[in-house]
Length: 565
Image 1 (cartoon, rainbow, N blue to C red):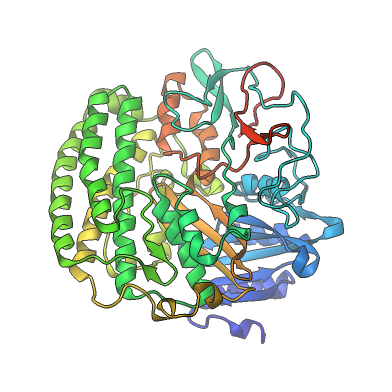
Image 2 (image 1 turned 135 degrees about the vertical axis):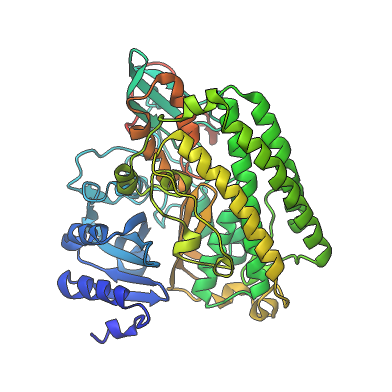
């Protein structure tokens, strides 16, 4: 009971979960802060714990495998469960000794654990007990079996010593290929649709063709905490500020630093601008996929002033470089406020007219309505996020569930639909554009005075010294595509482990139930409807060890089957 008393008297429901995990499942609290608790449970209890949390309404956000051998001679997997409706996170740790490196699989209990379990096996080398289908997810087929890139002894710039000749990934050649380069895919991914006549009956998927090693780089000597936000911003070309802010929030939690209120408002304004330009980009792409190129061009015309606003506030149309630990680098003066307000009025007026036109075109409604359906139960099982979740009747929005930055100071509606089809996902994004405009107006009206950088971070003490080793933090930000999650274990001057789970990583597996049973002609729209960002999901590539250079994965000929979703 003494260990539990460290903990959150203002959150009695959280205390009850801790009681259950410690007294009934043999767990122990290893760390707690605010609305986060970290509980280590025995391996044999993990499945029961996962079943209890899932049945209590938790969503599995992700799991993070960690090489903790330098600390305690073990590997570990941290399963991050979010009690969204109650606003707190329960992080369940399971350790695996170096000489007995396995954890029980929970995928049959919590289907959303599928990808992160396989990634733990690929990148750390932790075996999965009790799992029927075990395959490679991230690493290419010719990667050495005993080489796991996120183990601590593997340098960030290491190149594998050997490959298996002729084992490149090739398509299964059983169905209709989409990708890895295709007019409806703006990044390389491979879908193979199995059809009967014109109906999709199953889907094979192979991703992870692009590699930048960002998580590994973040742990390398090349980076310090203050450099991480600039690296994080390059995870995604559309919502880079989301990743930068999420990483910053995790580091500020670990350091016990709360940025000035004015800096929080500015971050929130830029996040909402990013949501507007992302949704407008997507609506234009959706119109293009449906063959309505006039709609595509007009939507991007409406979007352009939003990009100009981003440059006005941050100095850049994208990759803003605005965030620093403890605040932001640039302020918003009164002249800028007037220009922002005027531009928002124009964007709102023009997009309202355009959205009414787009959503009333009979051909668009006929193609989008009733296609790509994801039921609420399927969305719940896979823990999908963002507009995909809200279009299937799941009320999930980090801005409401875990209010951060200045979101608690504004009022807004979270659009919710129950149809779960492509049209519902269109309508969610359209409505969110107008909600974001309203949020920015409220923030500008209430913009407080004061500094934009925490006083500690402006002093002589380097920021890297303000973040002590041995701390944990989970941060979440509502990206345009959904919940973005960063898990941080702090080290000396840099992260010990930095795990990034982008929204698309969580939503891609949902494409299988969405595509099955639909006409082949609707597949491009359904794939586009999750607004996939493959660059922030991918982690591996093929290396030619003879030259030391990366090469494109070949995708022709017979051989290895594509991986099933």
